[in-house]
Picture (cartoon, one colour):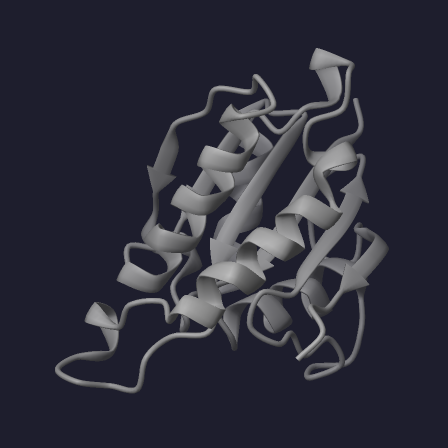
Length: 165
């Protein structure tokens, strides 16, 4: 069974006021995330229920949670009802290798990850067998990786889209 993994970097966040974990999305960040999701709706919520995103996984940091909420609301408007699963496996400093095991055990066909740099770049590089630093993602950038097995060097990057800045 082929697995689709959407990787979404959170939207633009406010400058640090207290802690990095507490940073909120800016108004521009919210609009950019919505634009990124709208552009990819046909792939996130296709007519075939089998191919729809089944879960949204988000880092516990506020800006990733807010990004995931925007995705959830936009997919809900398309009739796709999802819960957001919070995981420490996709924080900025997480190790991509730890995520592969959990993805393999998940039995999902399609998942969306709402996360951060440098994790999203490191994950795409490891997944797709690229040199470290090859896949830099801007805020609100989204990628689609397709694989038979979620593991290092096994991903096929179908696209990486950036919101116009």
